[in-house]
Length: 149
Image (cartoon, rainbow, N blue to C red):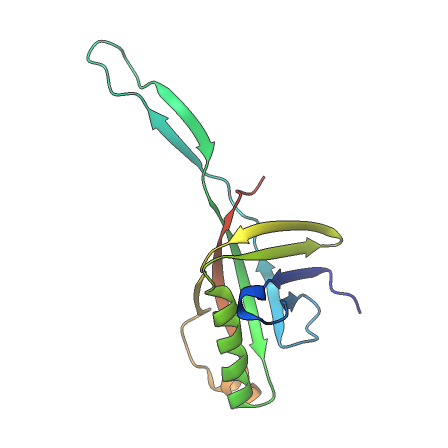
C-alpha cells in the first residue's frame, strides 16, 4: 500500500539516509490520525516612528514570518530498547541545525528548509498500554523557511 502522506527528513549532515514518516502505519514512524498540520502564515510588520501630529501608524514593510510545520508522530518498535533507539534517531534528525523537510500529500510535494524542532510527548504520560505495546506518540513543531505559501 502506498502512503497517502509522507514526511521526509533529510539527514545528509549526519551521514545517514533520509528518515521517512508515513501515513500507512507500515514502519517505525507513522503520522497519527490527523497528525499533519498545515503551516500557518503570520506577518512581520515594520513601522515608521510614531508621529505626534499624524493619526495611526505608517507601515514601512510587511513580510511573511517564518512558519511552523506541526506533526504528531507515532514511533513504534517490537522492544522497549528498540523504541528508545527509534525515538532517539527521530530526535537527532529533528535537532539538526538546518535540514530539508519534504511533505508529500497524494503526489503534491513541498520542500522547506527546517531548523531544530520542538519535540514532546503527546500527552506527557507513560501509559502502561503504550509501554507494553512499545509505542510513543510525539508532538513536533518544525520551524520552516521559506514561509508556507
